[in-house]
Image 1 (cartoon, rainbow, N blue to C red):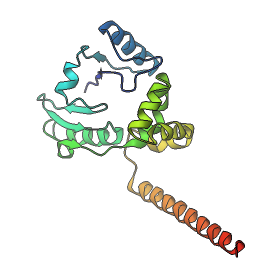
Image 2: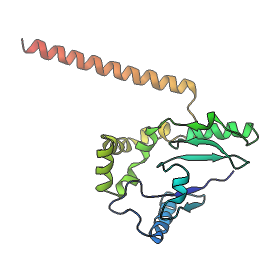
Image 3: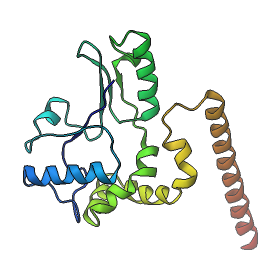
Image 4: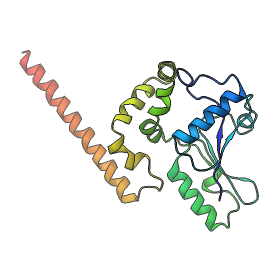
Length: 198
């Protein structure tokens, strides 16, 4: 099994990471990315026109698993480590041939991106933040906010293996309880405000 990373373009250009104007600039940025993020596998660099990026769908963060025959076994629309872990295990069982998980996984797993995405967004400040916030209101702010809670959220958001069903049920129950308590608090607060104004 081999892992490759392909640098395609600046997702959020600005500040310290402007949009690429030359191939040399793209090479220097790829070297920095590999060094700063501790990428241990090869980092390939698409040409300045983005030819490879265009052939593979022009999306910002997909992952492709290629089987032993050179065919796409899975297209993961938004890179998600637990999904890839499951897919690779399934592919191994199949002798590393054929499609897995139906061949495509479209679910946008945003928690990992928001918990771990601030350092990349920070490099392009202020332009990168403004563009993200304007294109998807709240995404820039939530990325900053959730990154502040990274020590607590990382074990859930940045895991490599899928959570066991019992952990998922426990987290869902905990989230439901928190929402219920918040609703109860605001309902009582609103009732107290109404009583005090009479």
